[in-house]
Image (cartoon, rainbow, N blue to C red):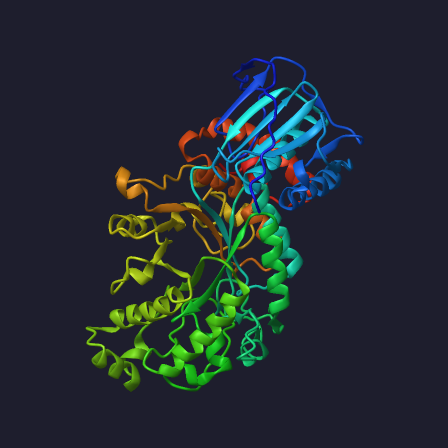
Amino acid sequence: MKNVFFAVMALAVSFTEPRAADSPAIVPMPQHIAYATGEGAVLSAGSRIAVPGGAKALRSVAELFVRDICREHGLRLKVSGISESGIVLGIDPALRAEAYSLDIGQGRVAVTGGSPSGLFYGLQSLRQLISQYGMRLPAVHVEDEPCFAYRGAMLDCCRHFFTVDEIKTFIDILALHKLNRFHWHLTDDQGWRIEIRHYPELTKVGSRRAETVLGRNTNIYDGIPSGGYYTQRQIRDVVAYAAERFITVIPEIEMPGHASAALAAYPWLGCAGEGYMVRTRWGVFPEVYCAGKDSTFEFMENVLAEVCELFPSEYIHIGGDECPKQSWTSCPACQQRIRNERLEHENELQSYFVHRIEKWLNARGRNLIGWDEILEGGISKTATIMSWRGADSGVAAAKAGNQVIMTPNTHCYLDYFQTQEPERLEPLGIGGYVPVRKVYSFDPYDRLSSAEQSCIQGVQGNIWTEYIASFAHAQHMALPRLAALAEVGWACDRRDFGDFTRRMTVFRKLYDKCGYRYASYFFDGTGE
């Protein structure tokens, strides 16, 4: 789409810094915000949203905003052409793509973005101000843009399956927080969740487990079959839904470990060739893809070919974490591969696996992301590292010149407990302690020079679902910690936890209006 520029006349008002106690409560914190000395704007059923030139992308953004405001406040605004009052939208190519300005004064609202995505974020801020003040908005001037290009969250749909409608709600939650990446974990030991037409047994067999263990890997099971997967039609629908909200969906197809569900469907993919099952317990299992057979790579390439057709993302996540190598040590094919490729050990065999897949992806215009274990045995300079076992691996990768997404379990694992008394206050969880304050305190640039900091693409929060069986529970774990992480990603250079706490007391009202099932610990004093 050609850039559309709508010249908005400067408001003839002066600006003052807002008073902390009653200033607009926008999350993440804007780059600059000030009160205007003059009248604000009042929205009503007669108010219009002006889309200059009828630009299709801008109209889509406006219509999403209209639906949100109607659902949350019962007010249906009208989208039209140029208007002197109401809400006026525009594009200013002088701004960066995700940047925006928001001006409220003299009876109208002007929202200008560097691109449709920037405009979308400006309207998210306006949405928050309407939640705070109602339809009588104060005169305010906002200038804003994010610190990091990559601001994401991951949802594990393998340990427990979530419906398409629930996935869309999760995407809505990301959009509200100005996050722009949805990392969709689609394959693991406990379930294969993506339809691959070339290999129908992946979903016929691999998406179903006989039952699920109760508690923390007790010897008691629920006896209830569990399954579910996303058809390719559903995946295209989700990807399009996310794209309308300027969120890129990054699929994760685990390899060479966490492969039990795929091996149960096609036993020839493993070193033993038999005896596999979709796992009913949690943990790391010794059954992995055979790295010695060319048929394994043919399978992976056929799978990834369909994945690439479904997901336009620049990145494809291949996992690479927690890959036991016992089966490789006794597999004739794997040992022959080590000799043929002049590798020193099984760690290098995993690197060979990753390199081979990366070369295939690069040839098709895609880039590879892997968890930090892919550093073991050596990686290419073009692989992107997602650092989860603390920040050390991310620091090492950035110093080596690799691109890095910081998602350390010390700060970014949103399936960890939120209080210091989880047995008394919280549902059963995997362990750990990551309260809101800890998330907020994360410094993605710690121990990096200015040059090395350029390798940090951004941050991501992860929600693993071994102990999260319902979407209500997933929301409880994500919120409000996702807001803290969003501020790390968007406003890393201007954070203030005291002011964040103040703003969140207002922002939670929008959670309420949306019906989100957030945790109360941060608000009621039982958690930081």
